[in-house]
Figure 1 (cartoon, rainbow, N blue to C red):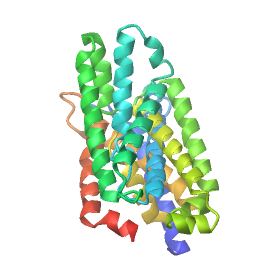
Figure 2 (figure 1 turned 60 degrees about the vertical axis):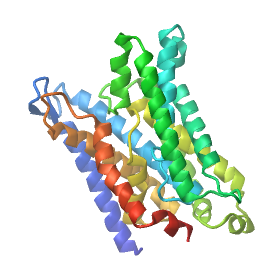
Figure 3 (figure 1 turned 45 degrees about the horizontal axis):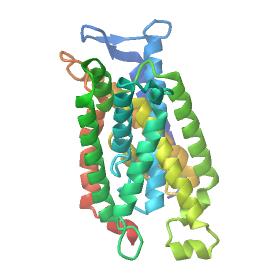
Length: 332
């Protein structure tokens, strides 16, 4: 990619993020379902800024997590949602709600970050175990199928636990499970997510050449001095914490972690030292734009959950990658 094309990509990405933020801040709906416009100085602006902050952090976390998973597995189909990390976090958070209902509220202290992280790590471990090929490596197609199955089972388990909850606790968990960008986010979750995003971005930028080399085979990576096992452990932990933090903040959101990295590579190139920041911006722009677009949907029965919109937009993109043989192309 030429420098001029990369520069145009950065300009486009910056303008897209700025436009999405402005649209989300200025456009909304009131309690009667009518469109409203807020300008600096009005009281409603504070609520919309909270939503923008939530979208910035959760979108960046999901996109960075997807970038690290794609690097780790050398598979462009990998993402926190596709590999079941989001659903694993959802199941463990639902379990934490159930335990809290019977007398263990301490599990939900800190905004469910702990159970969300445990769920993401468990889901990734199971997906990696069943995604292996006979030689001990990772088979891309088996990995994706394993992730889909793990995600389906975890989502079903979360639904079962939700059904077991007391009636007064179900609405909160159900609304979170559909995906939402909170206008008044939990401060502790915001802080943890911000720290995870900053740490992940710094790690990716600092280790950019190493992550570039991870695209080679294991033998080639070792031959040029890469400690493959250590890098993989860092990527596993980093992607899991990022996915867990985003899920705890906004619920399980589909395909942001898949589309964001691909969008960033298309705009600024594949080098990790550059694409890490672009991936974070892409994920943020996509999620904030989705949150803004849902306000234009008919609101007679309430606003459309942002998780539904992400799935409707991301599903066709995922099928397009499968149709183009993305997994096989990556392995070549």
